[in-house]
Image (cartoon, rainbow, N blue to C red; front, side):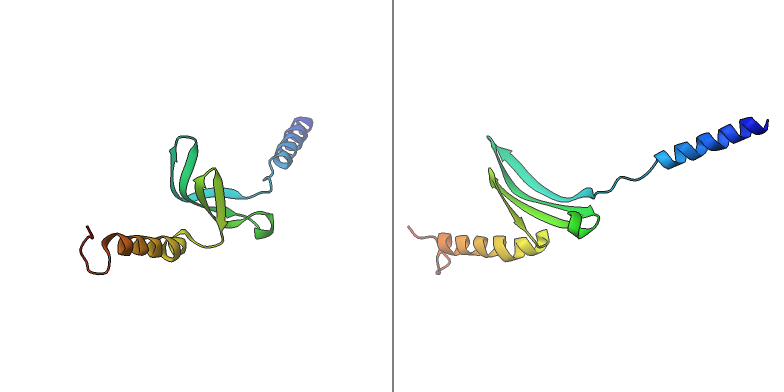
Length: 104
């Protein structure tokens, strides 16, 4: 009986030591505003990875334009406010003009 109990305890100790967490970040998609046209990907993708920043943890915002990708070190909301809104306002200004009516 004692040998059986020792065998069970020994087996449980072996199984407990084999179940260890692997190092590395856990990636979670926060924003995925991408779409594909033909062979290119366009849009913005933001992910959060849990883990140490020196091993790749933290927030990553990636801008896709066809086969090119640009990495920004800011949140997606800030990136939209600082880049997309001024570009849209400039485009609207050029399209409509200063008078508020469309030029012929």
